[in-house]
Length: 314
Image 1 (cartoon, helix red, strand yellow):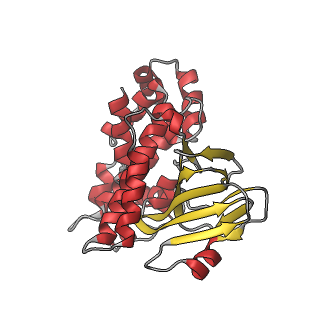
Image 2: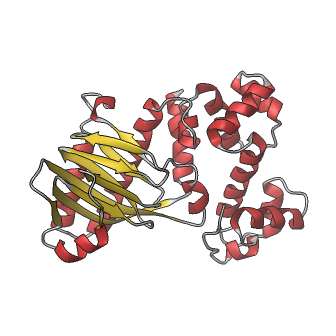
Image 3: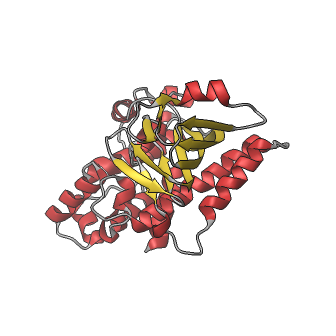
């Protein structure tokens, strides 16, 4: 069952592209604080000491040496130790970081925290809808990883080394390495997250709901009823509908429609594609009905998606 859930994660991640932007190390001595504006997504690998992170949704966690933090939504967050007002990270980077150094220092005379931090962005027309299914904060503690999983520190050090001594293809290499780190973090989080965790990734930890999700994803253009999906999940109709909505944040049929439209958005990018053909393929009887549903989802009509579209609101 875990393999099926990981495959669902792959299906979602193929609809968005990840681009690495920046890698640096930070030596921070208490008290200190850093504020990260909305825009880029970030990860922090704690090599030494501890750090308190406050996500955009108000959630706070204390991470220690060996832990990995991923904040994929790009909605801004603060980190620090000692309760001091955070300094904007952009000011620190502008003042201290150089191409040959890729390091910053900040703080007082207290305990040391050593981080490797990276910035990245998700791209693509489907990006706003896809980011909505990700949690504001993923915390992978060292205790949650098996002894064989030394990938966090290894990838982080490799990233920093690649950034410090750029060779041909370095930008692509950095993006791919960040891609691996983020996907591994999500995969570990799916395996260890409590089933009641809200959000799409949290739903993958629920064996019954993940079966229904897999059915929707495997046959996106098949119209299923709530009762049929409940049967796949092995639940009563009412219990399934309630639990699906709690975990996913959308009713089953609404999610099914949204996924079909995401597939349609990808299909419209293919050469020599016609809006009417795509509309019929994803289950709409008329061009007008398809156009209305598509525009309600993305904020622009299907014809514009064929010309490149833009990232509209989900």
